[in-house]
Length: 303
Length: 332
Image (cartoon, rainbow over all chains, first blue to last red; front, top):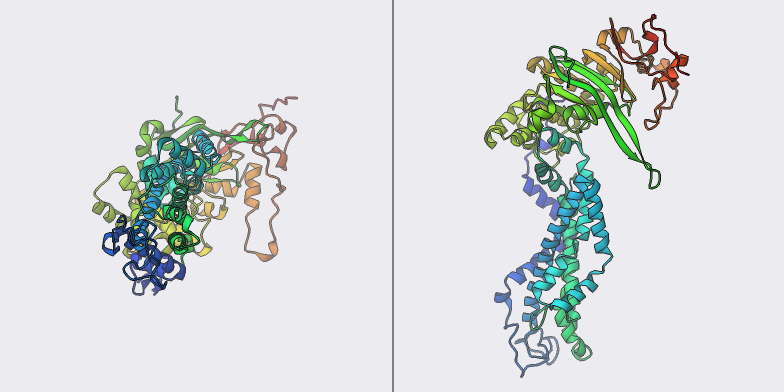
């Protein structure tokens, strides 16, 4: 084997039995305990959400007025028919929690898709073209940042009513600011690099350069922002539902469950603690996984 | 435009100027910086034209204009007698290709070597993806990179190997002119000569023409056929390599040549006689731009800008070499 630099025969480490790129990526991921934990938890939540009809022992909407406020199994009065008890309407709490994962993840993913598309488009265009486009984008971001998300969301929901999809749309169209800001500065950085100039010199169109040269190189930033925003969207939905302006009953949203349980807080503490813990655990998992993804994907951090 | 094109000229620049408007702060307004100021060049097929000058003299701006990456503020560029604006983006790319200085930023870290090298073909819509890959492998072989590098990522390559990839990418469209913007200055000394030899071999083999931007005069003497010396956005001397190194004429060229470090340890750091101050390009000196640093300045150097004059040993822009008959008129 010839090394073109020295012309001598060499046996470099890279020539040793090579791992495929995917295998190496996986190995880097699993090398981090935090990422493994976060991604494992997140995968668990996703599995629960996908398999909800198979996992839930009862119908999450089915009321049973003979079994109201049944405590979970570890209480003396608890039983295994309703492992995590029932709510004041006699609905099985475990089933509602399982279906609640669906709503939280649906909101997290949809909001991130909408705001990610809006924010990334704006940020990349502003960062790539600069000048007037950049000024217009900066103005829009400042305008958007001057309005608190929760207030605008409350106002919109109060005016046009609320449903799951309205909450998703409102949050999606409000939360693009961080995407725009981060993508703008990342694009500015990449745009000044010589490989963009080389692509231009090869005659590549602007669309081709943005899609082929710029976007793949700012994707790590995109993933980090997306995970953070997903977590924050899930929390915002819970907050809106808690205030009664988000997802409407009888949908089993975790925020709504906390809200419905707050009057019973001193008598059946678990009704508020269970959805609260589920929410905290999901946010924790998403943030851990996002941090790990960033470390593993960015080429700079590789060894 | 009336092109004073010399026969056999491949790439020509006529009175090329590029200015940038520089913001001075919120209430100061904007000022004009002339990065390149009225540069005319004519590059013949097969030659190696080196452009030298200190940092900030506009050589990279000139290179970007010749590549079509930066539109000139004034002046025109012609390829084979035809205005490059008529050639279009893709047409220009087939004729002129770049090799950049830093191979760590000139290769997209998310593409494999084969995909980087084949990108110009993909952009031009040449061949199927299998054909493009085959051509990429051929050209990689020509620049001395074995097949096994094709599916690696740039981060797995050394600086010299990366620069070979960049050269392969520049050559895959069979361009006539390759514009090398300091292609060796980011590399280890031991690798520099290999890359220079590779460039020299490729030129002979493929009949390439180089515009070679460098501030390393040792490299220039080794590779150039003609040398253009730039100072503050203008060409101050342009002549054959042998002539320039044997008898430099412009005082700035002489200072540049005096600045070359020798391996002789006792020689110390050479004194160029230039002083430390590079003039502010936003506020260039009147008259000859070099006069504040010139050891042989004359009174009228501060007022009259010397034109670039052709004489028997090349082009030079300096009052010292004006014909004696035309006595300089001193403007008060």
